[in-house]
Length: 125
Image (cartoon, rainbow, N blue to C red; front, side, top):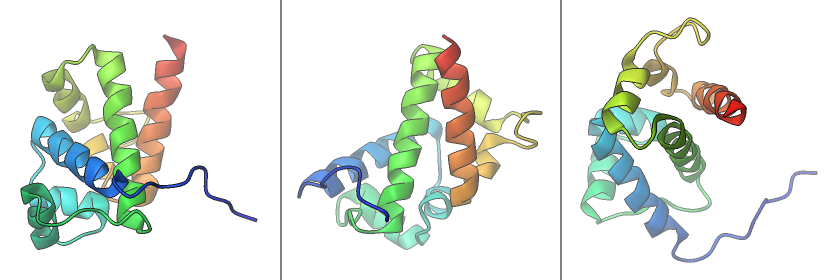
């Protein structure tokens, strides 16, 4: 039986939406790219970034946003808050992952794979 890890509070959608928008800004993600990561249209992402909409805590997009935040925080810890290094890592071909992380995160499975990969390397530190 599947259970929720934690109860989601009312403001969580707004908080995660703001965090995801800032991550997209730091990494230089377009609305179309962020939309493919979250499973949303570019128009919806535009509304998210402008504050006219927020991620629904009951949606798959919210869950994808949580994993994107996890990836950001893990890379931030590994690379010492160097946004350019994170961008470079995301756009460089990775032999272990058999592709560029930025391309892999377009699918939910790829996002999980990249998160797990970074977390495994972070655990070594």
